[in-house]
Amino acid sequence: MRLVDEVFPVERPPTRELITSHRCEECDDIARTFAPYSAADLPAEVIAAHYGSLCLLSASALAHYMPAYLRYAVSHFTDDEDPSSVVEFLVYQLCPEPLSHDGYEEHLRGTLEGFSERQGEALEAFLDLVQAEPGLPEFFGDWESHRARFRELWRTRGRA
Ligand SMILES: [Zn+2]
Image (cartoon, rainbow, N blue to C red; front, side, top):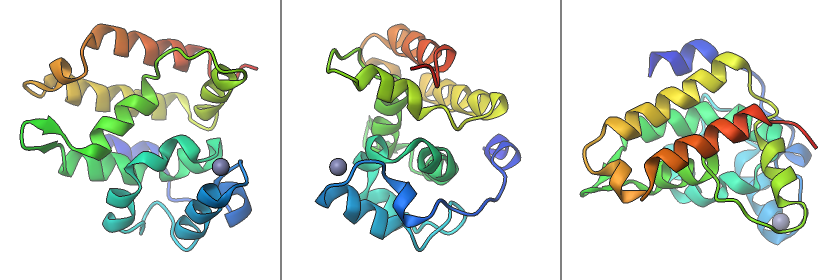
C-alpha cells in the first residue's frame, strides 16, 4: 500500500509511558515491548505476536504503529482461506461492535483521535482490500455493518 507510506510520515514513537494509557502488567509489558521501536522498524515477530494488542495502545501509539500493522497485514493477508490474525484484529479494531461498558464507547472514539483525514482514507483503503478478497467479507459476517461502524467511529472520533 503506497498510500500508507505517503500519509504516515516517519515520526518518533511515543515514549514508553505514553504507549499504553492503562497501567497493569499486560499494558506495561506491551509498552516495554514496543518502546525500543518506531513504526519503521517494529519487527514482524512483534506484530505477529501482538495482533491482539491494538486495543490496548494509546491513541497516539495506535496512530504511530498503525502503518507497521497495515504494511504487515497486506503482505500477510490470509492464512489458509481465513484472514490472518493481524487482518482479523485490525478489522475488529477499526469496526468495533457496539458495547455498552461504561466508558468503552468514549475509549473507542478516542482511539482514532490521532489520525489525519488522509490517514483515515488509508484505513478505508485497507477495508476496501479486505472487501475485495474472496471469502473475507463473508468471514466477518455482515460486512456492510462493519464498514458502517468504521464510518461512524471515524465521524465521531475524538469526541467525549
Ligand atoms: Zn491494562
